Image (cartoon, rainbow over all chains, first blue to last red):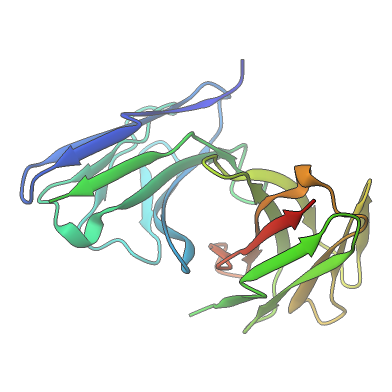
Length: 112
Length: 110
């Protein structure tokens, strides 16, 4: 089954404790992206990747890192999480950048 | 930077009625996409519009892209309970970044 898989689905952590949210897609998509969703703000892009080893900042990249060492994986790294990063995070992939995006199930992160 | 505004933020609809949600961009778009997110779910792609003035239909849903490629609308006829959710537009400008609107959350009164 074609899908985008995020882990974990739920995470509660403490301020400053490094964490990684994994994202994997099995559709051989070149394009991958991370979004955060907050009430009233819609989906805001954090980082995106047009292909392996190619990443670029979205609209809200501060406090986040990504890597794209393989085509299928695009982890999101929070080196020192803070409470304002409490949010619902979605990973998405697309065949190329200008096509429909397939979203993962989401990761609800709470930083206390 | 590019901003995509979506109105209304909330839409309460009587079952069987029609409604429209609107999307406006501060810049000319190369294309616009629409997504639906059910409560507790993830966004699911509905459609992409590319051409100026383009109109596409999916059963009871009609999508339109403005002549100037700066606005779009989604019209739903004869609303059903299955239409509940949040509808997002997402516009792509020349910088290729996809900017999402804040969404229209639809509730339906049976």
